[in-house]
Image (cartoon, rainbow, N blue to C red; front, side, top):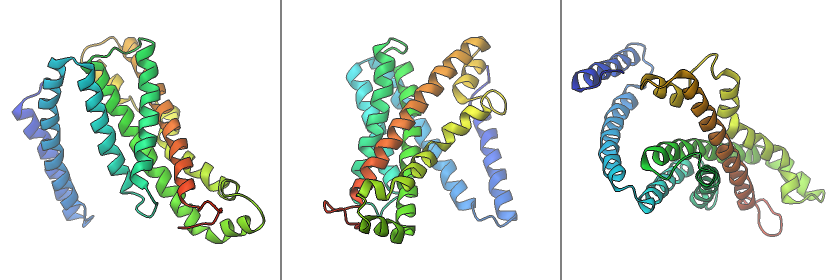
Length: 251
C-alpha cells in the first residue's frame, strides 16, 4: 500500500512545481494553467473527499442518485462549452450523457454486478459520466466543424433532394467515431502498453491481479457502452439542431 499523508502530498506537489519550471524554461506557455490546475484540483479533490465520506455514511439510494445527477449536470455544462455554436447545446449534452450513464449503470445494478452502495456506485458513476462527457464534447465539436467546413457540400446534397440526415451522414459517422476514439485506442493497448486506473488501484490496494483484471474488464466494457450510447445520441440531437423543419441548414 502506498503511504499517504501531508509529506507525501507535498512531495507530489513538488513534481507540479518541476512541471511549471520546465514549462517556463522552455517557453511552452502552460505554467499558468498548471498552477491554476494544481490549486483547483487540490481544492476540488479534498472537498470531494469530505463530501464522499458524508455520502458513504448515508448509504441512501436517493443521495447516490442525487450525486450522479450533479455529476451529469456539471459534465453536460463542461461539454457544452466546447461547441457554443450549436443551438440548445447544453440540453443536448445533458440528454446524451444521461442516456449513456443511466443505460449502463442501470443494467449493472439490475443484474447485480454492482450494488447500490456509495463505494461502488459513485466511483463507477464518475468514470462513466466523465468518459461520456468527453465523448459528447468531441462529437459536438467535430460535427459542428465538419458541417460548417463543408457547408457547400451539405447544401448541394440538399438541393439534389437528399434529406438532412442523408446530407450529413458521412460527417455524422466521423463525429461519432472521433468521440469513441479514446475507447477504441483503449482496447488496442490495454494490458500491453498501459494498466488502466481501476486495475491499478485494486492492485495497489492489495487485490489479487486476476480479480483486478476481471473488474477492469467489466468497467472497460461498461464505459465503452456508455460512450457509444452518448456519442450516437449526441450526434443525432446535434444534427437535428443544425436544420430547420424544412431541411434548411441554419448554422
